[in-house]
Image (cartoon, rainbow, N blue to C red; front, side, top):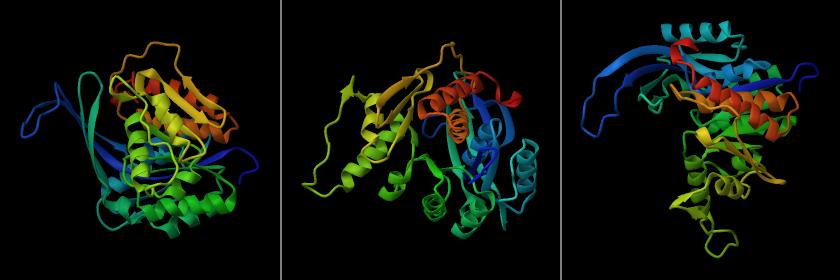
Length: 307
């Protein structure tokens, strides 16, 4: 691990985002016209690395295609100060994300992983050996094998592993057990809890009661229940802030300023990137989540083309 400036490695995806703004989201079988269109570098891994590098040295471990888009996104990341030596070039196309944004800033995203699927466990381990980060952040837009390589490197090296379990899919119990914290929104956290409950053998002790309010799970209760799976958890709740859970209990983190969202794309990634950079710098989980919440709140108030 580093002996000077705290460092972060983000093991994750890189995409080109294709963004269209619409007056309202289309219903099934419906076509709507977009009012604006733009293309920009993105992907959860790259977005999170951008959030982290503003606060400390950050390396990106990922895979892009050998197409011109790959050249473009790598140059863009390097221009933001990210260590891109660990970005693998694979034959084929760089990943794409198809994004529609409504007037209230909400979005719908479809990701085509493409070259992100070429990120191998061997490449992940070699790059983490090279950079020796204090904190490693990974998400779910890469393969389980690449994800597990990051977990195993952290176990062997004593680094802190942080997992943004998004997009939601099956997560091995040992990966969640190594995540300190697991970072999700309330819907993603609930999906993890339901999957864990379904996998629990019949008759095994464990909490199976749902704590509900108005027919929906409260984010604080999701955070508390996630401690059954991980040493700590952070559940983001949009404008309501975030809920931080660890052995000391559950705390609610909010921002003191009013947030008027123009585009929520990338808010969760900004949160995760700032969170790990603050943790690498020695902040407590509560304080790191507070800084991350403020950063995400500031991001959504800026039009994407000005970020």
